[in-house]
Length: 392
Ligand SMILES: Cc1cc2nc3c(=O)[nH]c(=O)nc-3n(C[C@H](O)[C@H](O)[C@H](O)COP(=O)(O)OP(=O)(O)OC[C@H]3O[C@@H](n4cnc5c(N)ncnc54)[C@H](O)[C@@H]3O)c2cc1C
Image (cartoon, rainbow, N blue to C red; front, side, top):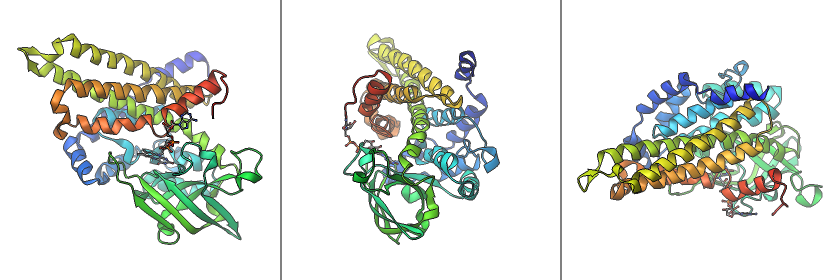
């Protein structure tokens, strides 16, 4: 692919996806999300609607029953969901987590799982990497999977394993060779596809975490959980590489959600600034109100360009680590600044739940922490793009 071809794909906007996704979202207005938020409940009907319209399987190749669309298309779907005021966090992992199976699974695993994930019959929503003690230092994780005949015995704990209570399967990263017996710290880790339906109550327990957003996130405890050797994806000891290979896609897709949030905040701020009259004129007539909104718009446009570039490079099969990380960084900050601006524009009413601003504002804060925190993005750019010394 030439650079001019890349430019074309940067411009592709998928209106045929945006319009129907927007219409689905219209069936799930703020009132729906507020009710679930207050009760910390899962948006089952919303996820069902996206599943029925085959959006959650859009990245799965057609030969496995998906739509075989490029990453940019999935990015448009998620951005549209968020710009419509909805939240895809309940199900976005169903889109990209399957990439680990697709890229590194055996033919048998692909045949067994991908068609059912594409149809929604099987939910692959959970991704167990982060641990409470080791946090961002993923290669030091402590959960172990020890080979015993035709099984592995898993012990340890994961934290922030989102959607585990609403998923049939979970991608698990665990250490299969002790850290002091491997050449590099990224070696000796393996990936497994754990069937949560079999595992729960048989060595695996899931506990919800009470959080400031309605995210369905959990802690997962492993106590001599026995999983079949056939549940391992790819070669033993190479799991970290497999997980890394999916991270660019995840960063680009979540950056698209952040762009959607920023667009939502800007639209709501403009509407309110035009409607609300104080001192006998619309508040939007004041430069102190309109300049921050205009700045948020410019920042969002700029961030969106790097998100599009990252997706175009990814879809062209080209290296996109720098762009995916920059996209996540800039989009998360654009969303946060737009959210803060919208909050300020709404004055006291931003605090009233019925306006949805405080809920969206809480929700969009997550993009600066997960799936990777801002500092870790900056360490990537400093070391791998700029050639500065490794800082950790
Ligand atoms: C709601 C929610 C959902 C999540 N969902 C999932 C999920 O489904 N699956 C999953 O595996 N994980 C998930 N996560 C985990 C998320 O990816 C981590 O929280 C995130 O990567 C940060 O890790 P940590 O919380 O352990 O922070 P820590 O690693 O403890 O870091 C704390 C702070 O220190 C900074 N820091 C740490 N080391 C350095 C360094 N060397 N240089 C500079 N700064 C540093 C970090 O940037 C951060 O700001 C989720 C988290 C949340 C909050």
